[in-house]
Amino acid sequence: MSVTIGIIKEGKVPIDRRVPLTPAQVGQVKTEYPDLTIYCQRSDIRCFDDVEYEKHGAILTDDVSDCDIILGVKEVPLNMLSEGKTHFFFSHTIKKQEYNRGLLQAIVGKQIRLIDWECLTNLKGQRLIAFGRYAGIVGAYNGILTFGKRYNIFHLRPAHECFDLEDMKTEYAKVELPAIKIAVTGGGRVAKGSMEVLNGMGIRRVSPAEFVNELFDEPVYTQLNTRDYNRKIGRGEFDRDEFYADPVLYESAFHPYAQKADVLLAGAFWDPLAPVLFTRTEVLKNDFKIKVVADITCDIEGSIPSTKQPATIEDPIYDYNPSNDRVEAAFRDEGNITVMAVDNLPCELPRNASEDFGEEFLNHILPNLLGEDKDGIIERATITQGGKLMPKYAYLQDYLDGH
Image 1 (cartoon, rainbow, N blue to C red):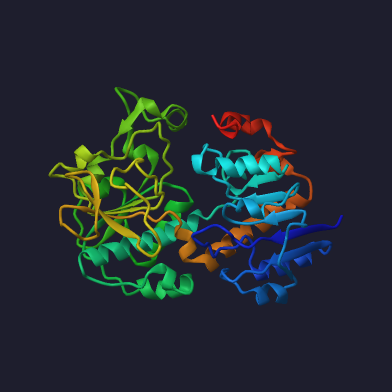
Image 2 (image 1 turned 120 degrees about the vertical axis):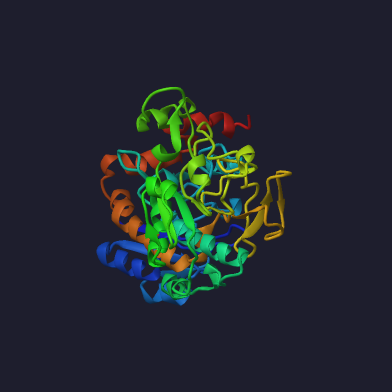
């Protein structure tokens, strides 16, 4: 069966230079699926040039609306949605995000089959495709860069000024940190990406117990999983399944780490029903030590009180003044916490992030899309089809209706 796939030009502002498939991956798809035709909408913002796509067998065009399947990264502007077609992109609608209600309404009105990258999971509910690793890599790099700037001990090129990850590695090879302690939260792609950078900088990893109880004459970091910084209210052992099912039964146990850490790299998923990591009241205590927070997850007014607003790639750092609970200019006062909270970190290394993403698409998604949908991977991620919500996403109906 002949199928056409279109790679759309990213239309969201601010611009995003990432792509769902690199030129080389287009060539790989063409080899493995000879009956597949790939069109590429011309773009002057991608991290790969149009001519590279053409070289690897894509057909350049100004319009991909006739393609059966249209691949993008960020939300598609309403005027670029193609009626009756299959669209892949991060829709940011499944949590009833108010700012995208009109987008979902337009998708339903145009009878589009929307498949959300975020919803592509295996039977265990684990995501099969994401940019999390590069969020962690860039977030950790930015966190260390921020520490260097705050104390004026070294200066690094911003990640977005590096050509790719290899170029960035040459930059962070220059880093010489004093004997500080760095706490990393999370155990998924984001945290692992962060630890890649810390390991690449030669920073020693220690256990949570060593982090709290021992002194070191070199920089060290520890990785904290959910059980390390949450405890059951009252009595009882930490139960991971119970915590994720009913987080209100737990309270934060992060303060011992806040008393020892100089830098926090926050990479853990946070449920609004779960305990916050720490409070403004705790920040005001004399024993609260953290001075630099790289909030890679960038949950505004979420688990970290200092993350009051998102920052941008061009202006990634601000200060949080716990005395008045306000944002101030970066490095304004030694009593402030310096915050790095960019909400689109993978965009800073678009080539590498796109390569990883495209590889996961080829390995896990495309075979199920073009062949038998083993384990219902595509079905579970399909939010709308035929002008209505799919049963799994029926909870969005009131949101869709404007209530």
